[in-house]
Amino acid sequence: MRLQMPRLSFRTVFWALVAVGLAALLALAFRPGAAAVDTAEVSRGPLTVTIRDEARTRSREVYVVSAPVAGRLLRVGNRAGEPVAAGEVIAVVQPAPPTFIDERSRREGEAAVRAGMAGLQLSQAELERAETQLAWARSEAQRAETLFAGGVASQSALDRARLELRTAAAAVAHARAGVGVRQADLEAARTRLVDPGGSGGTARTVSIRAPAAGRVLRVLQESEAVVAQGAPVMEIGDPGDIEVVAELLSSDAARVSVGAPVSIDSWGGPPVSGRVRKIEPAGFLKVSALGVEEQRVNVIIDAVDPPASWRAVGHGYRVEAAVTVWRADSVLRVPVGSLFRDGGRWAVFRVEGGRARLTPVQIGQSDGELTEVRSGLAPGQRVVVYPGQAVADGGRVRPR
Image 1 (cartoon, rainbow, N blue to C red):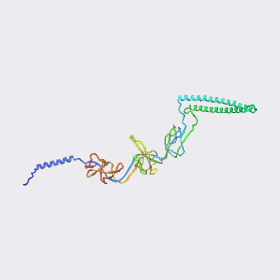
Image 2 (cartoon, rainbow, N blue to C red; image 1 turned 90 degrees about the vertical axis):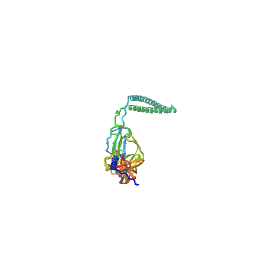
Image 3 (cartoon, helix red, strand yellow; image 1 turned 90 degrees about the horizontal axis):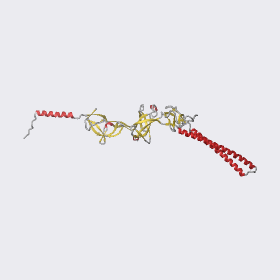
Image 4 (cartoon, rainbow, N blue to C red; image 1 turned 180 degrees about the horizontal axis):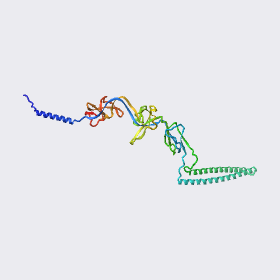
């Protein structure tokens, strides 16, 4: 016995087809569109990793000339940029004028002068008494000599007269020395009362001479002034023989090696080639413009190009130095903006057939714009740059 399938009417088939068509239209209407993304090609080429930071130029040998003594520095006639010869007089120091005396100190000084005058008079009186004693002792000694010659006086009387003469002579010398001391004390007391500008006469001077031949880099004290001993006056050096000092972070300086190539730019002309000559062994603390304490190290750089190529650069100019720490001629590279972290590993969105495919990668060196890819990608593939929330694994994408 065969079962017969019920026949569908035309009306039923028509409305079924209409329902399927509407469902398909609704699915197409509400299907998410392809996300517009920026893409970049995975390429192979050279990659150079550099450390870039601000630097400054300085003369290789800078001499800071300072005042050898405290006093009044006369106006310096040399100007910045003028040549100087070794041993040439570049500044003159005179003794500083005496300070002003307040009323109390002045009265004390005047009292000291009066005391000195009185002491001098006392010493002069003692000298006069000693000279009188000497004259009497001399006459007594002569009398004793005469009596001893006549056999009237004894030898002991003669010896006693001679002793008194020598004692009186010593007393005169002592009194004269006392007068000299009192005169010096009086002169010192009067000197302490001298006002500024009241000494008169020509003061002695001390000449400051250039320690080496070169040019004046800076005049630190140009006008006449009273300076302390050791106060800097000017800097002398050779602006044609300069080096570059880059203050790198200690973590960056640890990656730099002596002899590394350097590109020096941002000085107002074309880039200049250089080479690292020395990395100082000690670091120093520096506070950045944002108030962050940073440990930095001085890296000394010599220019490789001839001086004529950057003759306009002088002492203390600001430049930028890019020190090369790693370089390869042919590596697989992707833009830094295409990389992101996915579950603790690096990954990219690879574009394949109009869809984004999550692809884990292993990366190496980076110069801030391009990053070395060691595995996970092949040359010629395209990756999404700066993927947003709209990009997901398997999602449809379209290049902008």
